[in-house]
Each structure stands twice: as C-alpha cells, then as structure tokens.
Length: 476
Ligand code: NAD
Image (cartoon, rainbow, N blue to C red; front, side, top):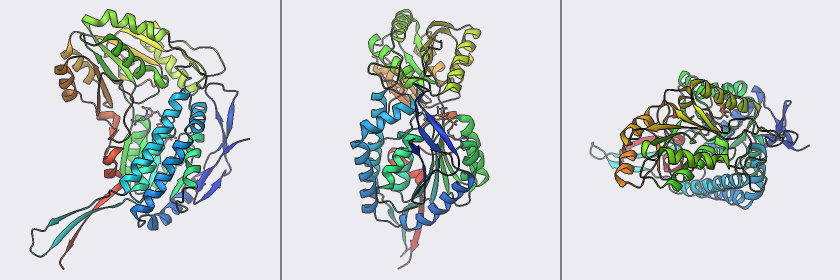
C-alpha cells in the first residue's frame, strides 16, 4: 500500500491515525493511506519550525534562491507524473492537472528570483545627523491551511513566498488531497532546506487547525478555503493578535454585452463556469447577458454545455471530471433542486451520472433572478445560471450586487464598456473577453468583500504578508 506520511522536523511519520486517499473518478481506486496528524504532532512541528526559523531567517538570498529554484526545476521536470497524481486524487482533467503542476513550478522559480530582490529603503531623517532605514524581516513561523481544489498550486503559492522571506512553515493541506501535498513535501525534503524549516502536518482541519492557530509560536496564518472556516480562522487569529490572510469563496459574474463576439463569449463562459468541474473560487457562476444577444447566447451556451464530455479525469477527451466527493455532489444536486424550487429553468444537465465516481452533468439555468439563492450562495460545482439584463448599466449593477468580490468578467468589443467595467467592478480581479478563472502567477491574486481578507497573495505583493517592516534610526 502506498503511504502519504507527514513531514515533521526532517522526519517522515505516519503517526497513529491513517485515512484512505480515494480517486473521485473511481471510488474503487484507493491511491494509498495518508497520515492524519494528532494535536501533539502539530505542536511538535511548530516547535521544530520555531527552532529552525532562526537560522533560516539569517540565510543569504543566494541560499534561498538556490533552494527555491531547485524545487521549481524538479516540479517542472516531473510535471507529467505529478499532474497524473493530482488528477487522480482531485479529479480535474489530466491537462488541467499538468497545467497546475507547471504553475506550481513557475511560482517557486518566481520567488527564487524575489529572494534576490528583497530591498529596503534609506531616507534622510528629519533630525540632523541621523540615518533612517527600513528593511523587511521574516514574520517567523507561518501556518498555512489550504483547500482541496488546487492541491499543489495553492500550497506552492503560500510555501514559496514564506520561505523566500525567511520564514519557517507548517502546511496543513486539505483532507481530500494528501498525495499532492506529500509529493511537494518530498521535493522540498530533498532540496537542501534545513530540518524543521518546512513541515507537512495533514489531518482533520477542525481538530488540528485550531491547535495551529492558537499556538503562541505561530506568528501568522495564511488560509484558503470556505467563508465559514475562514471566519473562524480570522476570529481565532484576532483573539491571539496574529497576522492573518484569507482567500475564500466567490459568486463571480461574467457580463455578456450585445456587442460581444458570440464565440468568444461562449468560450469564456464555458471555461469559466465549468472547467475544473466548476470547482474554482474564480468560477463564473452568474452569466449576466443583455437583452439584444440573450436568445442567441442562451441557445449557443445550452448547446455547448450539453456537449461537454464528462468522464474519468485521466481519460483522453474528458472535459469535465468528477466532483471531489459524495458530500460535495450531494450539495451540488441540492442546489439544483433549490434553483428549480425558486423558479429557475433548467435547460441542461443537473443530474447525477452513473459510474464508479462522483459524476454530475453540468447544469445550466436560465430565467434566473439575482435575488435567488442560486445566485447568492457559492455552489462550488458544475452549476451556472443566466440572468437577463436590460443594458450595460443594469448588468454592472447586477454584477456588483453580491457579498463576494473575487473575480468579474465582461465580454464586449467596446473599449468604452471594457474600460468602464474595469473601473467600476467591485471585484479584486477583472477580466475582459477572458474567463473569470485562469490567472498569471507573477501578479497579485485576491478579492474584496466576503472573498478575501488581509493583504494580497502572489507576485511582489506577497511580501506584505510574509514579512515585517523594521525601521531603524542611527546616529553615527
Ligand atoms: P474548507 O473551508 O472546508 O477547508 C479549507 C481548509 O481548512 C482545509 O485544509 C480544512 O481541513 C481546513 N479547516 C477546516 N476546519 C478548520 C478549522 N476549524 N480551523 C482551521 N482549519 C480548518 O474549504 P474546502 O472545501 O477545502 O475548499 C473549498 C472552498 O475554498 C471554496 O469556498 C472555494 O471558493 C475556496 N477557495 C478559495 C480560493 C481563493 O483563492 N479565494 C481558492 C481555492 C478555493
């Protein structure tokens, strides 16, 4: 039996509790057994990280560059093997799995370079003869909590900047995807990082998550997951006066205007709403379409959605893989019923498909209203709705009328509307003629309102969370 152990203070450990890692495309396929840590193991990892951080925080930019660059190189060299593992345990298609692995490798390479560019500032003091300088220093030990839907990219976009700025790390990946986190840990373990600088402590979030957050030696927590869990993480961090960063859900709008190129719009909406089985925080779940193109768009979109090929994530030709697990599938199907009961009209999909995995036919609703629950709550599955808008101004109001604010898109050939939407959208990321999902790895990622809390992740902006500014005054 393959095992996915935890990695604590430079040692691999299966501990005393184990859980099976199940393939969502075929529940008879068990990838192996994963370690499920206890509170004691979490405490042990944090103590090790606190000890190791002191020397790592004083390592040179060259040492950090060499290690992060080597990690990136190995991830990229093993993209097919790691992509296959990811696709087998998470259920996104193989090309999507490989693409995610490539992104993880690129993120490590980006932060390798950033380690060489950690800059301070020097200014003249307002007092004569005094020098003032400002420098970025490590935060200390950082707790990282990640969700299941990007099992290698999200750990990468937290681990890489944490190490780049001289912090030590305890990573707790989601219960459903221990294999990808283990594979990443395996690469980190061989990279030359001193023992204790990186620790993997997988286990049940509600049990060991609070142990991590409450530990006095954890200086900050970076969390990605649901709003409900994020809120509890933020409350616990506030109680302990810890730095916290949250990335949470979305109810992302995609506006399609009368002047849109229909093929571009359908392509962007299909990708944004349904690829990765709709299990992306940036998924376009609300398609807001103006009157002049509405009928044409509904017909073209219905045809495109009903032709999507659902199947085993690793089969050639599969466009939509399974839902992550039985609980999420049940939730998706429940939302289909909620939408129907609210008066939304189902034009295709929406039912459970047979097979050995958690398959669902992608669902598309029309005649929906933005006040319906299906348009207000995140489903996190292959379910999208179409909302009719009178004109651009109406569409903009509907797009911004949400408790979330992660990503928003517009399909238009008008520079005037594209520019106006970029200025007036209340989302943290705006896409023009592109799906709401799918972002670059070298620029900031994050949203507004209920989608994000704290400073931005990724790109140069990651420095805000992963470092502290110290101001020094010197009278020579
Ligand atoms: P989740 O909130 O259930 O779990 C996220 C992580 O938190 C897991 O590792 C889990 O074990 C842990 N956890 C659970 N209870 C905890 C507790 N009490 N204390 C500390 N940690 C705890 O989310 P999920 O189902 O894994 O992921 C789906 C959600 O993630 C969706 O809402 C999606 O929109 C969001 N997401 C957001 C982004 C983003 O960048 N904004 C990216 C991907 C996913």
